[in-house]
Image (cartoon, rainbow, N blue to C red; front, side, top):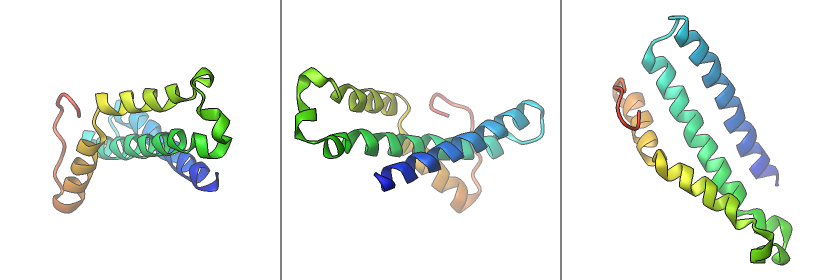
Length: 111
């Protein structure tokens, strides 16, 4: 439970940082790249934390929780569906490309 909480807290902190940067971007104080990379980081951290939490839900709640009638599987399906609509593996690649080469992400379908 502690590991899941730590992951969720980290994702939440990155989200708050990205939100502050979005406000700064709208005021013209930061560039798109200065905004995009932290947003990508928040997105990937939130995705990982959510998948971890929803995958471990059965471990935390015990074997009776796996009964279809409880419907806990819907949380994992929802997280997985959202993560597939905006692939986080692309975000990881773009973050790495920026860190290693200074590449600036261009606006696109998944950017």
